[in-house]
Image (tube, rainbow over all chains, first blue to last red; front, side, top):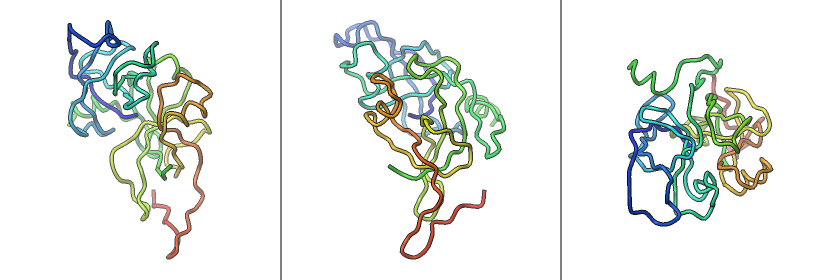
Length: 104
Length: 98
C-alpha cells in the first residue's frame, strides 16, 4: 500500500461488466514528503474520495478486495483517506503530504 | 519478507470497512548497510510497534489476510516483528543513529 493524491475523477461509460458503477479516480503516487513517486495510475474508489485528497491505495490482486465482488478486473484501489501522517522519529505531527507540498 | 524502518504513522478516519480499528504505519525498506531506501510503504501493524523501530515486514496479500484474521482485508504489507540484530559474515548491520 502506498500514498497518493487524487488528481480527478475518470468517467468511462463503456466498461467491462465487473467495473459497472464503480467510481474510478486518477491518482498520483506520492512520498510522505509530498514528492511525486512515479507516474499517475487509475484506481477504483469505493470510499468516496475527491480531487486533492491524499489517500492510501493498494495494488495487484488485493485491489479487488475493496469490492463486494472480489473477482473484478482491477489492479489498484483506494482504501483510506489520509487525515495526516506523523513522519518524525518522535511522532510529531507535521501535516499531510498535500499540506507539505503546498507549503513547499 | 524484508527489513524496514518505521518512519511514521498514517492517520485516516475515513477508510475501507475491513481496515477499521487497524493501525497503519509508514515504513521504508532498509539496505544491507542499514540505510533507508526507496519510497514509503503503508503497512498494517499486528504486533504494536513504534516509530523509529527496525522491523520485519511481510508483503503478500494472503499473509495479510491470515495475519489479520480477515478473508477480505485489502492489505499487503504487514509488520510482523521487531528486529533486535542482524549478523552478517563481516559484522552486524548497523543500527542507524536516529
